[in-house]
Amino acid sequence: MSDATGRPPVTSSSASPSASPSASPSAFPGGAVAPRSSGGPDLVFRALTAGETALFTSLPDDPRLGRALVGQHFATTDAGGEYRPEWSWVALRGERVVARAAWWGQPGDTEPVALDWFDFAPGEAEAAVRLLRAAPLYAEYSLLLPPGWRDLPDVRAAAEQRMAAAQRAGLRKLVERYRYTWTAGVDPLPPRTGRLVCRPEPDDAAFRAVMARTMTGTLDAHDRRMLDTRGLDAALDETLGILDRMPSPSHWRRVAYTPDGEVAGLHVPAANTTDRCVGFIAVVPEQRGHGYAYDLLLECTHDLVDLGATRIAAATDRTNTPMAAHFAAAGYPVSQERVDFVRDEGDTD
Image (cartoon, rainbow, N blue to C red; front, side, top):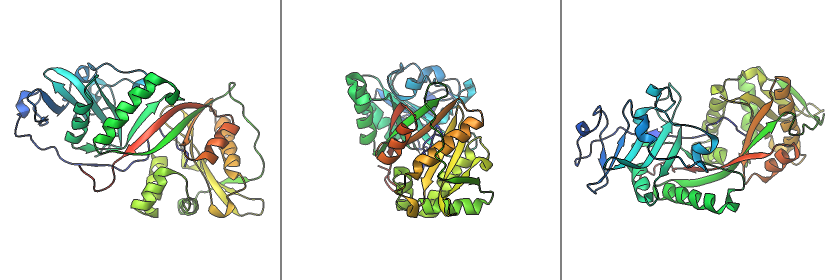
């Protein structure tokens, strides 16, 4: 799958906060969320309350990686931001924030869908580990990184510290991904190959059936994880749910056919909150080996340009070498890398 939703495919779960016997909620503003002690008298974990954006941002951002890399700023919903106070947690030594984590969800969500912020002060990796364990929240964590980050010693060192802390807190590295940004007038736009005929599919069930066929033998790590843990219907529900939440109409979606009228695959021109994007590209198993994913990428790109796009975002797994090669051939430069971490179902430690 090639997604550019701005939010990764996830599975999530949460639990209700429980009070720590070693601290009283009334010691903190609002008293609505129970703090949790690490076992040491000077380290306390708690959620924010309304009006505490400045407390969270008192820990300086590292502009080399994470959300700060892309210029994102933290603010709670009461301050006009997109993070709920109760889903934004800090580790405090006295009055100083030494680690922090913030989970994101859409306004109607009852559980978070992404762990956006996770960082810590120098020497406070253990506090960050304990913070993730203490907070009664879970969602997939994506660490955003610059292209070629392994060749940048300081960035690599900082990234490895965050990744190690996430793993010690119980998360598992799932996959590394490339994000691409195509820009009109800067990047090339190869012509359509003309080998496939793409048509809209107004029947949602028929479109789902084609997508189901493409899931067989998929190279996408998120899809494989869903298939392995929850089955085909759950994998389809997740992917189509992501596409349905995007602010682009379903009639943009296309099913591709060979000149003989056989289904070859599908592509989804889409939009996320900031850009037009390649929402999904896949080929059915019996048509693989012909390079049709490249054709589909070009079809999708041309459709988006015809719809007025001047920038197009896209993404694929680093391990999906065929799709990564197609993006390179189609003129899509890598604009960002990321590493995705998940928690296996049933693992709450």
